[in-house]
Length: 173
Image 1 (cartoon, helix red, strand yellow):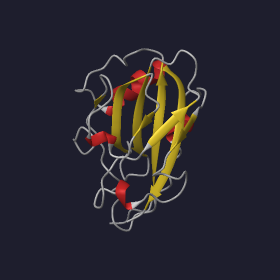
Image 2 (spheres, one colour; image 1 turned 30 degrees about the vertical axis):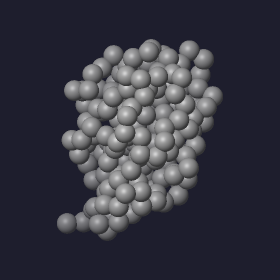
Image 3 (tube, helix red, strand yellow; image 1 turned 120 degrees about the horizontal axis):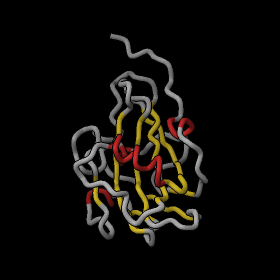
Image 4 (spheres, rainbow, N blue to C red; image 1 turned 180 degrees about the vertical axis):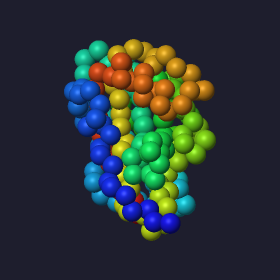
């Protein structure tokens, strides 16, 4: 079986535009290969993220990691962290497996786990892109619970996002 297929578009280019703000990472360099810590078979550790310049009125954040290059029609959600308090502007390396800030919680990623799953593209497949996104939310809570899918989180973000900050890494096995 061949995995040859077109490169998926940047999924965030397909959404209604919102203002951007800044996200940086000590662990992810935009457009560069991920380190072993962010690979499922190696460290499987969520990266450090810091953000600033969120739009006025931001009342909470959602942090996600999405791979649009997975060989599925819907990509692959690696991390969905919801209801991060507005006064939190960074997550330490490994934060997904530790105590979460405030009333933040995880929604199951596409591997079925509540937490972060590192990069795990099929062996020999093209380089995959991993979009780490901080979404500024107009409400103190997104209005979902931890039983919903990442698609439901994304649907709610379509109506409650004030801004979006994106950094992406790549990985090929």
